[in-house]
Image 1 (cartoon, rainbow, N blue to C red):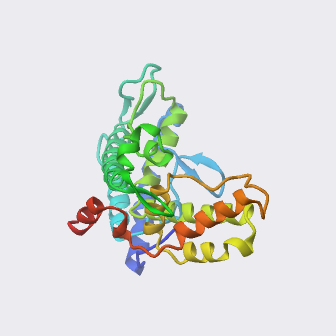
Image 2 (cartoon, rainbow, N blue to C red):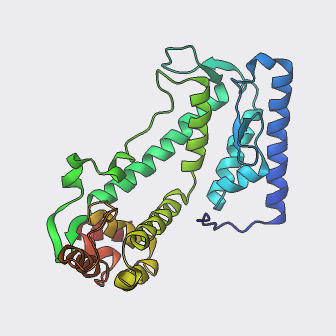
Image 3 (cartoon, rainbow, N blue to C red):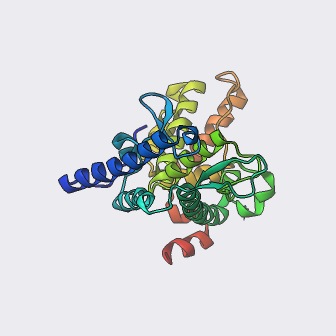
Length: 283
């Protein structure tokens, strides 16, 4: 699944992106050359083309992180702050028990991204908690938030993250920076929702006769990813049985009937919860 891009690249955008990346990489290269022993402490970025972490950030990597004008400004401002005097200073990673070190720049930027990521996680969690659980017969009378103790996968992934922990290694810091830069994207959840929808459809096609669920798949494919995710969560955040009953059996037919009754039901994003309706309309 390709990422969803909203930014319209202008000639001046390309030039500015390359200029800022070049200045960032030039300073990083000078630092590594002056103190090779600090190479593993100074910022490193994952390069998909080489499948390695490198002491530079490529324009291709940046473009993969920039989907909106907001992303563009945030990424460039982050790189520009590395040019400030003292940004390269080596410091202890906060709370670390193993003497792991980083730069002042990475410590500050990681903290900034954690704040953004956690705010978005909380907003998403607040919305999901208002979704009323349902099946093919309708709402079940309680919300996802009231089922919190059941440990739904989607809820667990929305727990607050930390910039630094006691047990982080130098390698851990590289992966943390990479994951935060990705999750900071404006369209991060939109892309995740679309991927979830694609994988759900794939699970259906792999485990059920296509002729039995053709209309279900068609309905899901045409569904906005926002609505799909809320309906998916309302049903219990689960994929269909990996090993369904034999086709033609009563259990199989009942399960297909449940699928049709649920996914073919005509409803809107706002039908899933009165509280959710109020929340969305007041945004």
